[in-house]
Amino acid sequence: MGSKFRSSIVFNVSLLGAGHFFSDFYANFLPALLPLVMTQLEMSLTLSGMLVMAYSVISSMLQPLGGYLIDKYGYAWLILVTTPVSAVFICLAGLANSKFALFLLVGLAGLGASIFHPLAASLMGKVVTEETKGTAMSVFIFGGNAGFALAPAIILYCLNAGGTASLIWLIIPGFIVTGASYLAGLHKVDISPAAKHSQTEVGQQGECWYKSRGLILLNCVNALRSWMQVALPTFLPVALAKAGQPPAVVASMLTIFLMSGAGGALLGGWVGDKVGRKNAVLGALVLSLPVTYLFLVNMSPSPVSYLLLAASGVLIQSTVPTSVVWAQEIIPDNAAMASGMMLGLSFGLGGVGAAITGALGDYIGLEGALLWSLLSIVIAIAIAFAIPQPGQKSLNLTEVTIKASKLN
Image (tube, rainbow, N blue to C red; front, side, top):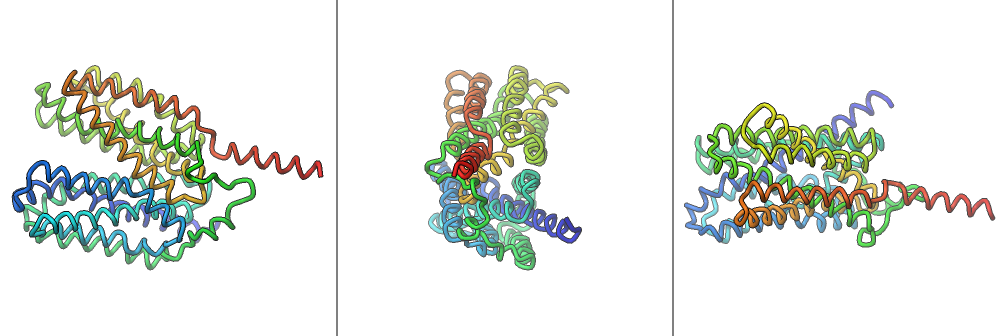
């Protein structure tokens, strides 16, 4: 492999990772904006919750639909539209002068995110070699995690410095990364159905997405894993505060979990490239179970609890890039839709699970509810064992074809 080709791969991977950084950066505007717009537009808590739910449904739950359309029509040029759409509409949301305008702006911003994620993840599979897909996906996921984590601090700084009007300046990075994508020619990458079919080797064509048992099971695994990924950072601060821990401890533990999760995402895809997708996912889930349990039974701040929390974040989040590539390998002709399922639908379903944790916490306490929620990981492990190894079915079909040709 020539150095020029390697440089092109590194640049494209970095560019898609940067695109994910800004897509998720804009996706996390709403929590920081919400207190302000609630006051400006005299919104009730119910209406505010509906706004958050609307954005979540559009930006996450619609990703499989966006991926399906991308797989069907091959609209790679949308990579030049999605990030600017999210940037413009979410930055204007703070200036909305009516509830209708606010919902419209937030909904359009979510639409940009729902298209970007499956499209960019599908493109990532096209600009790298087969042996480095997991590692490249790790860079992609890490970029999104970093953008999501940094957004609140940057938004609050802008709001304190210049009010909602200053958010307009944050549109610029979205157009810069889009300009770089144009110059790199990402919009010209052929992801059309015909191209996918011609590039798929005999015996390696995936099943139809709605007939794929492996894809359905992998969605269940990822949704159950997402349950803990959402529940822990949502309710851990509340549980610590109720236990009398000072805000500094609460903030430090939350930061450790989120940052270690970003590190796990960066590491997980590389591990999947080395040991296989199924082994990487199963290994991380199995190890996360005792580590998270030991932390939850004693959340008092100590070097050991901080270490256990960090390990939990690494292990729970490390399965994400591997799961995305695994899903793409199960249905290679619908790679964008597979990505949308792993990055959007599963995460949204995990949020539903976290709501169950909260409801359970009202009856038995948050500590007990979080411990019982670990059953989601146990069930995920059991389901993951039932998923065929990537390429297993394809190999059997190939063997049958070879044997048949010999008989003839």
